[in-house]
Every structure is written in C-alpha cells, then in structure tokens.
Length: 205
Image (cartoon, rainbow, N blue to C red; front, side, top):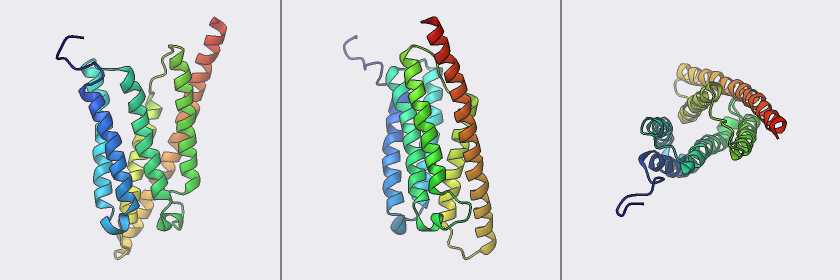
C-alpha cells in the first residue's frame, strides 16, 4: 500500500453501509421509546437508512469499489434494519390487536427466509459461485421497506380521523401481505437457483 493512502475497504460505499448500521441502532432506540418521541423520528431514520442501501450499492458498482467487506456488511445491514424494525413493530400492543396486521408469524416467515438464503449464499460464494441478488429479492426488499413505513404511520395514527385511520389500516394490510407473498416467492426462487448450483458443484466434483 502506498504511504498516506487509505486501505481499499475504507471507501465511500462501505462508509455508507457502516452508517446504515448506526442508523439502524438509532432507529431501534427510537422505536423502543416511541411513547415519548413518537414515530416521526423513526420514519425519518428508516427512510434515510433505506436510501443509503440503494446509494452504497450504486456507488460500489459505478466506482468499481466492490470489496469483500462490503459484500459481507451490506446484506447484514439490510437484514438488521428490516428484521429488527419488523420485530419492534410487531411487538407493539396496537399492532398485535390489529386485524390482518404485521403479526409475529409474518415476521418469523421474513426472518426465516433471510436466514435460509443468507446461509445458502454464504456456502455458494465460499465455493466461488456467484449468487448475487435477483429481481425478486429487490422487489421483496422494496415491499418490506414500504410496509415498515406504512406500519409506523399506522401506529402513529391517533384515530381521531376515522377515514384516515381506515385508509392507513388498508394500506398496512395490502403492503404487509404483498411483503409476505414476495418474501415467500423470492425465497422459493432463490432456493431453486441455489439448489441447481449446488447440484452443479456436486456433478463437477
């Protein structure tokens, strides 16, 4: 390394990923004390964190700054903020009592899918087999982000405007079950692709 230069892993995309992890921690703090600070700050933190998810990936590819550290931290940060946010939201009394809301069993499905695909990706990439994100995974992530924001807006609603409350509940139900469907669909799609790659490895070996 040339004296005075930064190591390759210390680049803008990786710094944005580290920032997203810190934002996730701050988000979890605000969600845990939502009775005092409300959900406005949480929504803002989540949106900024979600924006850095798109930005760090774009910059890494555009500037040719993809690193091994980034490939590890980026999916970790994504899963941390989505799964952690869903856990906090599903645990609130209002959400538990909401018909067709973001209930714990849905969060279990989301987390199970993420753990399974992460394990499969780790194995395949350990065998130097490409297992990069597919469109179904990006679609799933998009709906998960929408559901998180809508759920926080629903929980922040005071209920004084019954029409608005109904619209927020309807948006919550639609986004939640679209998230569930795309989560299951993308999980099955990844498993099918991964299984084929595993069989190819066995055949080659």
